[in-house]
Length: 227
Image (cartoon, rainbow, N blue to C red; front, side, top):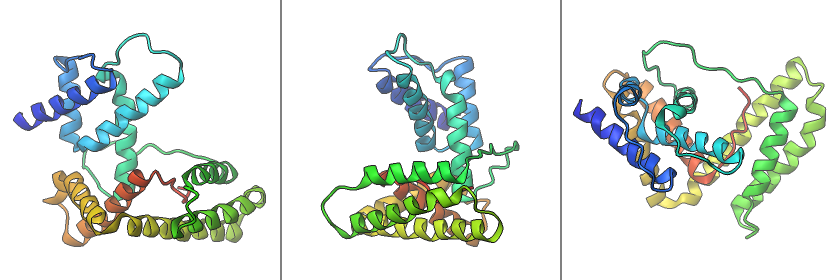
């Protein structure tokens, strides 16, 4: 229970900062709800990203009128947790189907191109050159993607996976040795609740995927692959 209390206090403090210093206590039913997240193994960083997602949507609706309660963030927290589980290959054993999202290939490419275009720093470095190359390739593929079927579609999806791996590798290289070590520590902390029941090979695969996810988040990289 002490670990759950610390988990709740950490999210309470984070929510307070998101609410511009207005403290909304996590007590009673809200405490039980957040303890449920901890029992499922939702990492703190994942829960914080879910809270961030809720606030992004809240801000998009216009000026805020009242502080946000933690209960309102649950759907976003669990959505982000589902995404995290898919990304790192972790089975929490908690049951329930992972939420599936469907997006057309042309729409996906359009969104990815927009995200990548915003990434370019204009300094002419190797990373910018790679991003520019990927943007040109995906931009050219957007219109033909509308009519792709069968093997041709599969070929483009495979190419997206290749480009995604190249982008992550370049971003990881740009972080430097100290940055990569920090990424590993964060990934290990996220997987810690599941480590004891994971075979070593499964853990290594999940750790590598989790490190890629941390790099993607730090560098604000879009996911090029389409599920």
